[in-house]
Image (cartoon, rainbow, N blue to C red; front, side, top):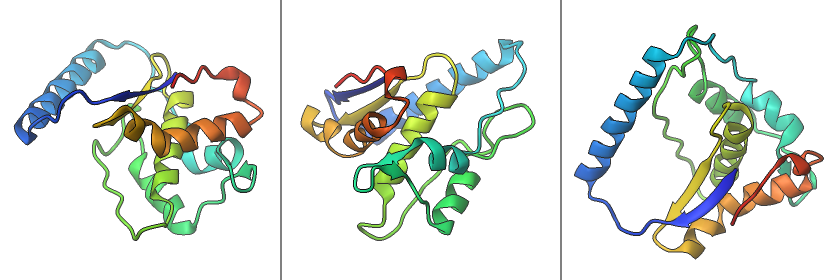
Length: 154
């Protein structure tokens, strides 16, 4: 499921840090009791070449080598199935595809991360939350032959 919603308030940096710590503690507690084998996710670059469609071409995306390297690095998995990195920062010049890459990651996460596949787009206003990456992801889903597998809520 893919959903857009406004952020009803602007949290302080301290509150954001506290929320992040709580999420990490929850994730650690869940991981500690999980008795299932680690999930090996598909390579994000190979997945994108087959399943992430670009509106301008109507075809799957062609990632630049630097984008491929960054995506593979960000989503490298350890032997236990967890990601090697908890945080990734991708910065580059304007109009270089950052929003499209974010949309690609969102769609990949929804399709491959198992149960409870939800991605939220947050913004100070609903329209801001729905504009960019959410819209690119929605269009990619509509263009793909897998559109019937999705429930996109806006």
